[in-house]
Image (cartoon, rainbow, N blue to C red; front, side, top):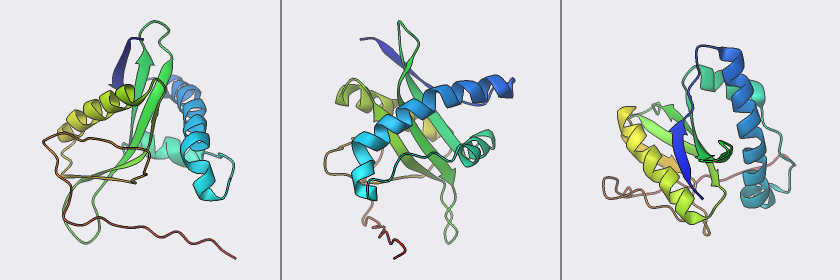
Length: 158
């Protein structure tokens, strides 16, 4: 299977761009949720906040990368990350929110390789992402793991 990877930025025709974004991200994000995260979140159903997602994407706060099948031009993978500056110190962070690719770990690793090269252009100093035991990612020799990792603890209302 041949594929290519590209960042998906808002285009001049916003309606067309939003339509394509919704068509591609919804289906893939739902697959990713069911496969990788739904059990971790008490089997909550997938319910993407489209308005917030689209607003952040249009403002450049969210970056969306797609893996496209060479022949069908169908999106077969994605990575979504938020670009931000933490409040207490001065670095530019690319926080990987979610990633998923059909076709196995090679496609996923190629997606990461492309994204890592691209975020250097965005001026990012750090990459933050959740770590799952069954999802190993190599960011390459130009990125080193920090001295300490952050742990996020999740609480639910009783």
